[in-house]
Image 1 (cartoon, rainbow, N blue to C red):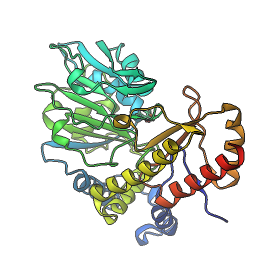
Image 2 (image 1 turned 90 degrees about the horizontal axis):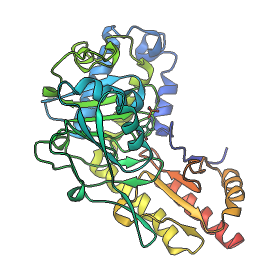
Image 3 (image 1 turned 120 degrees about the vertical axis):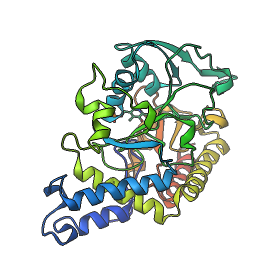
Length: 361
Ligand SMILES: *Cc1c(COP(=O)(O)O)cnc(C)c1O
């Protein structure tokens, strides 16, 4: 089989080494004579896996002791509800930054629980899309928190600034960029991320929350989404997705072996720079996003002649470059190049783009 590179946006590719290890121990994990998915989440063996996963995640992101790590279910969309249900008590006003598809979804869901003020930061100038810098966000003085999304998976837009708002609670949906670059956890109060983009398997959601935010039992939240309950039960109030948890743990170990987030960030920058350069250097492909806001994870591009879209996708698939079709609401192409995508995958895509341009341009 010739090499296939998978550019799926999510669930997305996982590191080959991790898949091989999981395969090796699939039927006989830890010499137990069975798979890890066949043992109790309360067994000593599984608890060790859970503890190690948390420790490795803490090392990678340099998570301070006054933050809790929770492993939850319900995906990022679960958190669109859980955040307002858990965090709002008296104050019902909130700020939702709208930078694209997912942050807008979070805003829409929040309306069930609070009075969100939506702040549109996606703008266009000279045909280029850009996001307003944080200094220009019109935040409400009396809002309970600010919610934003640092990487818009569908729009290919990113915010790289760290949130430095005095006396404001900051919530960030890191679903498609967690562990892609170095961040300072202290600048956030709550970070959440579904695992299926930049970690691995779907079914598990990671929450990193400042401990003093876990104050009350929520009156309205289902127990399985209640931060206090999840926290008091070490993320095992109900049966967690054990196999996804184990695989995520293997990915964390793989990232550490790769030299941690400093190295990963460098590689991610290199991969995305190469691809954007290819697009910018040609008259055949277009990306109309301002340099400052281009996503390192989800690279969107259009063919100048959209009639060629279908042929592009068919020929790309034949060349082993899979799932490049852009999301239906933005069209065009999208190459999702998360941590697991090797440099060779991006190089293969660039080579194919050159070939295709020569042939059809
Ligand atoms: C994929 C995605 C979501 C939705 O995640 P689910 O786990 O399917 O609920 C939310 N936000 C962002 C930024 C995403 O990329």
